[in-house]
Length: 169
Image 1 (cartoon, rainbow, N blue to C red):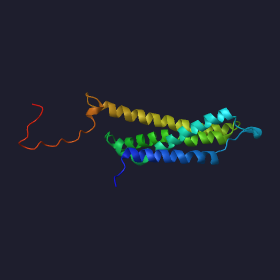
Image 2 (image 1 turned 90 degrees about the vertical axis):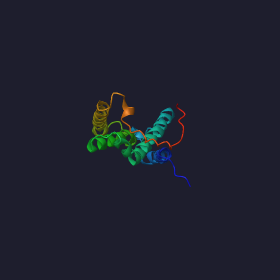
Image 3 (image 1 turned 30 degrees about the vertical axis):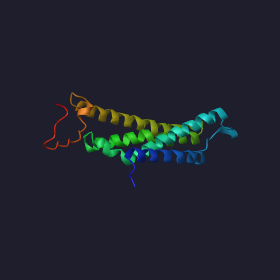
Image 4 (image 1 turned 60 degrees about the vertical axis):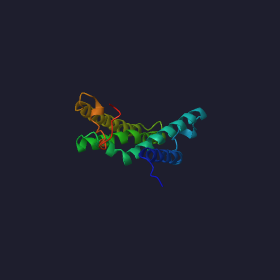
């Protein structure tokens, strides 16, 4: 039995969570519309389209939480900055699902609820953007002149057995 590659495990987690998140969204987060109004069918199509992409972003964010930290550690930045960048990336991917769903249940006349949602999500995304910009700056600033390819470690080469002729000659 062969092990699944990291890409496949990542994709499976993202797709399963996306698939599960859509019915959960529809069951738990009903739109709070005034006076018994309903969502017009054309708008419902667009809302469901967003649910698909938000669910995929949620699944990708959770898969990133599971598998992403070792990848970021390769940049060899401080543990704190690497952890903050890791959490910022995950937040950018995960936040859309609760953010949009909270907008639906908040209703259109609840200004204080809207402000709470905006601060909880938009402000934290601004902070996450600053963290990611600083992380990226630190990685680029300390990269050799040859570019980022020079930062990533190259796999060791196997020594050629003695007595063999090189094809390069």
